[in-house]
Image (cartoon, rainbow, N blue to C red; front, side, top):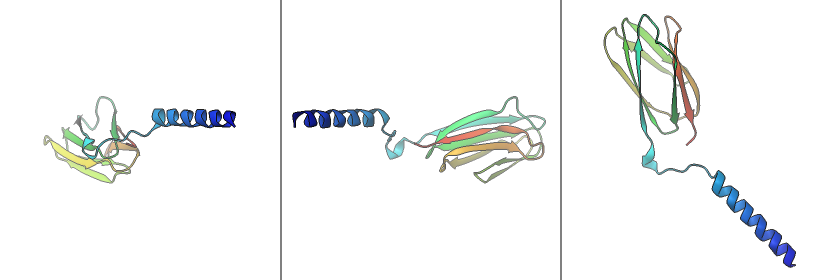
Length: 120
């Protein structure tokens, strides 16, 4: 009887410890962040594709400046952004689904980057 109690106690202690170590990251509702990213598009491309990391609930703020008219698309998020040459364009959206989403210039199909959205 005593061995069963000790075994049960150890199992409960082990499970409690595992839960504390592996519990989900729970943050208060107001803890979502706004993350800003800037793109300078020259001759239809940028120096290097960017990786943007967000968590569900975060707001992405994307600023674009292009030296010529262009269209940018974020695959999977259904954002279509029209850029006019020399005009700063800002797009904001809340990340509401986890995954990887490619950002590209339509005319040249140049990859501007990847938005990675992780669960909160």
